Every structure is written in structure tokens, then in C-alpha cells.
Length: 356
Image 1 (cartoon, helix red, strand yellow):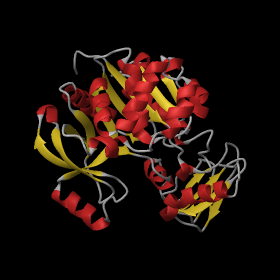
Image 2: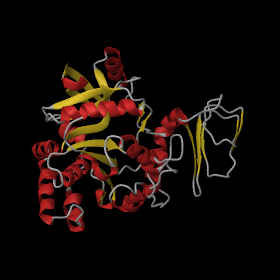
Image 3: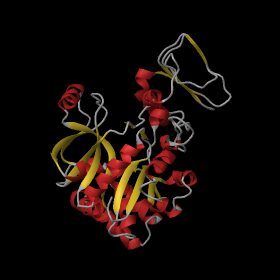
Image 4: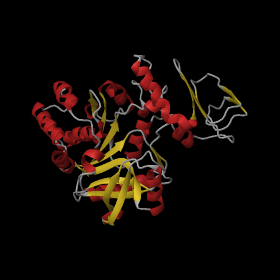
């Protein structure tokens, strides 16, 4: 890669409302074993990058109320490097906090930023792309991985690919946020755009300089943090952090910066964004059902079933459903409407129900 040390930043503050009732405020999506096996997505993310970055140089940014549970899942990561936000302020603030933490310890460090809740089928391909992205980042670029589209997806952001750079990278010409179906189809047919993976690479100094330039309110807050001498000072968090604008690192910095590169990669990736994608990634029987081995499925096709161990589920004459049973809640929804599960959480929150 490079001669400079690399720190990994795992962004683990998401709520995962589309996976209710499995995902709850105290146990969000990244803490669930949603795809194959028994390891939570967060644990699998750390294991995926460990060949490149040791636990001693991992930072996890999560919600304040999830700090202890996160430390329990990743015991080899130093506890002081699990940083808790009192309230979510999107990825720009989370990345800025991690970069500030690292630059005080290693002024020349490179950062590799990963969402903690994604699935990657081809991990060697991903690690190869990460190594190339870090090499480009060492030259002062802000770098992202661009995923080769497999369909005209309207739920992802796209990156327009520009002229070639070193190490298989290209200039990122433009970012396009969630195009309509017609534009997405044109992008895929032309081969001019990649999906925005949400994985980012840069030197700690470069991203802090870019934040100062494009998000000066956030840059000012970090300078106030420097005066406290403590990266998790509760007074600073309760004051400055809550006052910060909520903005993504893509929109707040990458879309505005003049030195942004993209490295194309095809690592069999999924953002595991809903029960529909969980069904797509799970092992399924000859009728397309992803269900516990003891489930009774009669004339049933294409269903996704989750239930507590020891609880028998039977489906008769139904197709393409999501059926998720937990101790205190039952969800039944057509797979085609899996994205709408978040509306249940919104309704429960509005009526003050604690089962979220």
C-alpha cells in the first residue's frame, strides 16, 4: 500500500429501521447477524479489513447508548477508540471526529472509512481496491470506491467516471444523488457511472482541511474540541455536537472538492438495506424460501422467515412474504414493500411506543 500507517473508521451509528422488529434502538442493524452465519454485520466488517488494519488502529463511531454493546462485540478494539455520539449528525461529523482523534496521535496517517452494516461477498477484491485507494489517497486525493452497477437502481447515489489516474483510479467527475429510473437506466447502459459505495479514503490532514474549507461550522467545532484535550469530553458533546448540522461526507465535502478520485470495484456488495436484500443474500430452498430449517412450508414460495430458536413457523399457500417474529412483535409484509417497514417505526415513535 504505502509507507504510512492506516487507520480504519467504522461508521456504526445507523438505526436500521427497515429491519424492525429484529432491529431496535438498543440493537440496530449492524449488531444483527442478518446474512449467513452467526456474526453481526459490524463484527464481519472488522474481520474483513483486519488483514489491512489491525484492531489497535480501528476507530468505531456509534451512538452514545451503544458504546458498551459495541465494545463487547469488538473487544480487541481499544475501548477509548469506540466513540459515542449523543445524537446522530450524519457521516460528515462522524468522519471529522474520527479524523481529529487520529491526527492527534498520528499526524501523517491515512484513513479508510467503512459503513459497518454492509455485505461483501468477494473480500479479496475489496481489499485489493482498498489498497489501491489508499495509494491514491497518499497523493492528497479524497478517494471513494465506485461499485459497478448490476441494475438501474434508483435507491443509490452514482458517481460519474472521469479521466484515468494512477492505480486504476479515475477522476470523479460528478456525484448524482438517487436518480429516477430513466436516468439510472441511461447511466448503466452507457457505463459512465458507478454506484457510490459509502467507503472513503484520505489522509487525516486532507479531510480535516477539506472540512475546514467546505463545512466551516464543523471545522470550528473541532477546534473547540481541541481546547478540551479530551476527544469524548461530555460537555463538548452535549453542547457543540448537538448544534452541528446533519450532513453526509459525500454531500458536504466530496461533491464540492476539486481533488476527488474513484476506484472501480466489483466485490459482490450489498448495503443490506431491507428484508428484500437480506432474502436475496440468504440461502434459499428450491421454492425460494429463506427460512429456519424446521419451518413447515406448504405451497409457499419466495418467503423470508425469521423466528426465535425453538419457535415453529408454518406457512401455507402464501408467496413472497416477509414474516419476522420476535418476543414482543410480529411483522408480516410483502417482500415488494420491505422498504416500508420503516413506516411502522415512524408510527410507533409517533404514538410513544417503546417497542422501537
